[in-house]
Image (cartoon, rainbow, N blue to C red; front, side, top):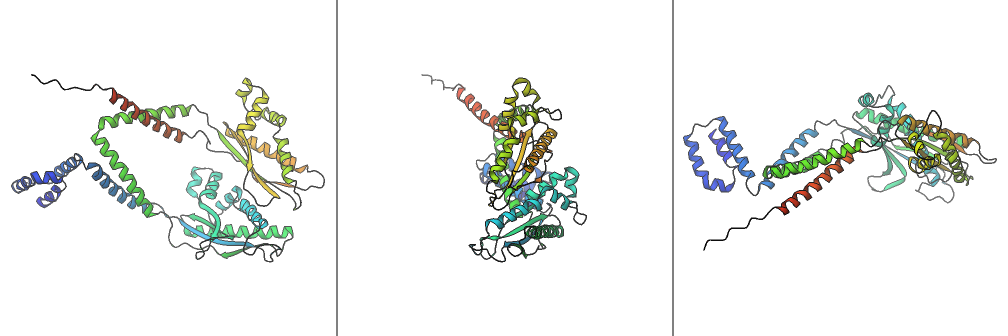
Length: 462
């Protein structure tokens, strides 16, 4: 025990050891030391280190090393995720005249984009998730709707991008890779196989429907692999995050230790700003956004298709049609606004602020256009019903094409029912409130310090 106490004494500052080291060693030789004495020596060493001018750096380094070790240990408790990859190539078997070798033309890329919208569509992924052989996302499906699980799968777990060969290091415009990550490596591989199979089946079906046999093909050049090792968690990233968090925590603890009154005042300002921001955010009504995805396509010689789409849009989004839609008994939109302003102003507000129609994906083919209809409203059911009715009107208007013009208007994704509000973002509002409280606190404390009376020394007696 005396040896442990001697080692613990080396944790004291060098100035203290130079002055009291010999006395401390003599005390150890004469005293009957116990286990409780070791805790007292360690506590005293910590207090002495905190009172030295180097305490900021020492505590920050110690906290950084401790948090880094904890983060690294915790990274091994995070569930592993495996990523399977497959590579496909799209290109003509018999290149058309004027085509550049090794470069996919616009028609090929458009076909790939259209297949991607259908294969990775919400309904397609929902069916894939519920396949008995896969049975994906069991825990997520207990907590959230299946539509949200499919959206998470599409936006977070599935990646589709141009393929870069390992040797060349540059993306191949004719090759694309499909990646999917999942905790089960066998299911990750099986999902990629299913997606590749759907792409190939859809490519053959579309080619046969269009009467194209040898001009367009989707070829599998690298099948779905079976990952041997997980690509997440990234232990190095956990280590660096632990170092950064520990460094910040160490500096904060030292600041609180040295200036507790100032830190308590700043915490009061920050807390007040946070509470005030949350109180203001609670009065802001929730706004839900529902959307639907549609696509219009025409024959190869139908250049006026964009004009036809704009004409349909003018009919559906006309003032008279929107006024009728707003006043339908089953919707009864903008009840409070209609009591304060004219129906024409309400329609203008709906068109300029709440209703949006935009391109879904930029397509290089000018003979097909996909677009999104979205509507924002405080009632999520009415938001979905409004988008559904607008989509139905688009479909009905698309069936009455002028003579000699054949357009195909199809629904890619029907109107969804939003589960969470799109605004307000209360988390961002709370962060802004806390930051505003911090700035106000700094300015207030500095102003108070400047107003303190300065004590002048008394004149010396003659």
